[in-house]
Image 1 (cartoon, helix red, strand yellow):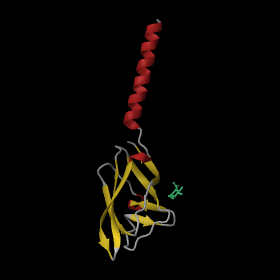
Image 2 (tube, protein in one colour):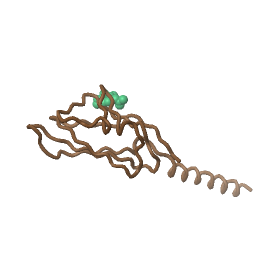
Image 3 (tube, rainbow, N blue to C red):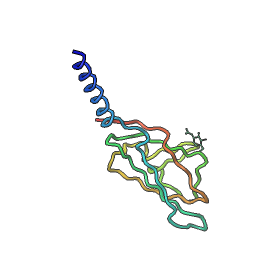
Image 4 (cartoon, protein in one colour):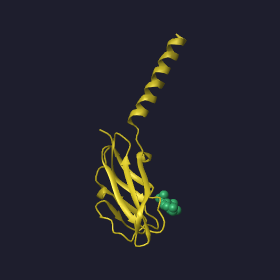
Length: 122
Ligand SMILES: *[C@@H]1O[C@H](CO)[C@@H](O)[C@H](O)[C@H]1NC(C)=O
């Protein structure tokens, strides 16, 4: 009797682990990587690659744009820069196969860490 309860508990625990592994996505799944890719008017040019590593779509993705500056304009529908936040892809869904690339030009790079998103798992 006791051993069957343990068995059931183990199965339940195992199922919880599996369901978490497969369905839980978070802001951490938004990957931001950037490289220095050139020089524009004596300032470094940075190329930013953003993708969603999760199988669930994420929308309304906002990045921390505190202090962000660029002497090269960025198409607002790709990255809409406001004071401390930037909206990615016009707030539209970013699914696993969408890779967003943009450039900016400034003396230093900015971390552009994701700060919020809405996760849509279907
Ligand atoms: C954004 O970045 C700034 C400077 O790096 C930091 O002080 C601030 O706490 C960040 N904001 C959020 C919401 O993470």
